[in-house]
Length: 102
Image 1 (spheres, rainbow, N blue to C red):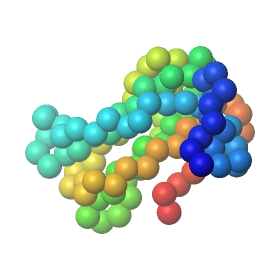
Image 2: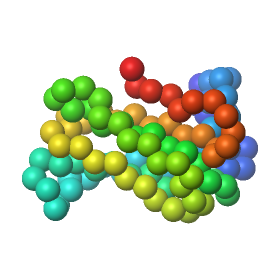
Image 3: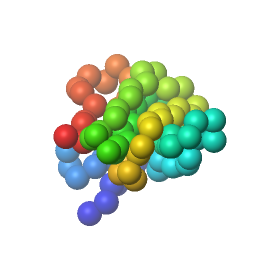
């Protein structure tokens, strides 16, 4: 069963309420050779904390941004990414931890 959404929030697998962000957009970073970037847009009406991870030849490379504003975008990039992407988000100040791909 996929997420059930209520306004700007999604309830995922009965586990917790997380903000709705866009699916990550993946693209080669034209400024750096062998660099890939993944970006999201905050579709929530409040600030969110976001973790984006890209799988690389050496394992997961993750970055976190705290307090991404409504309708704002944020991206994370990595050299030698192999295609796997992991994203988690939570409402800023809501407590709990961002999930990890490990």
